[in-house]
Image 1 (cartoon, one colour):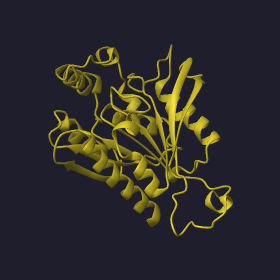
Image 2 (cartoon, rainbow, N blue to C red):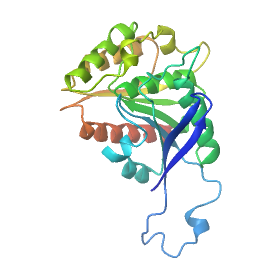
Image 3 (cartoon, helix red, strand yellow):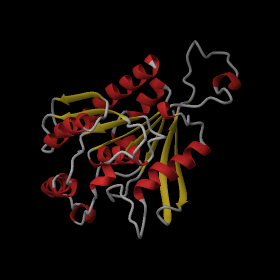
Image 4 (cartoon, rainbow, N blue to C red):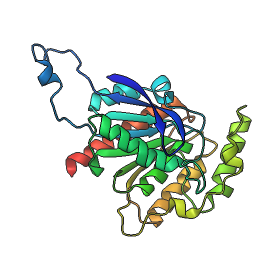
Length: 266
């Protein structure tokens, strides 16, 4: 698996930013022995892509350092794009930086134009953990023509989220000795940001959470709210134990398996 970190000037953010990209590469085996490079890396191959957002305190290298995503991607021969959310709630400020558009529009265009990534909606899965799960759903609703599926590991989906989930997440971070992002305290999220655009397809959602997570009730409610709002819920599953990287590895593996099973059926 190839791992690349790309730095570029973001027009949406008005600053330099990093994105980590994982691309499948050749794994030596008896099946590949004697093949030419043209056979090992066929021209025109386009990979299904997982756009994976981190936690409320992560950066573009968090998943690569902490999880088994590299081996999972190699197993399924999928590309993985790991942007940094900058702890800004994946929101577009009308008078400032556009953190949702940065990922759903700009990072998508740059990476799909630079690397061999499939642009078919059904080949693109966007997901995240905790605050990144919320961000993944928001990005999919911002650009429904690009992302066919959403993976939520925790997170929330409900009306009045700035007065429910965000304060609870801020309290939990403080309890763990972390300084919560100021955006959580000043959040003015509009419910419209989590509303599907009229006449556009809704993404399918895979939802999982940890049984020992202090914020598990928000994820449970998200499943009910998604169904009530007409989303197709591929799964909603509680994993035993804390909300740690072992949980995220197990849930991510199941979600990606589900994604590929759905592609085969389609």
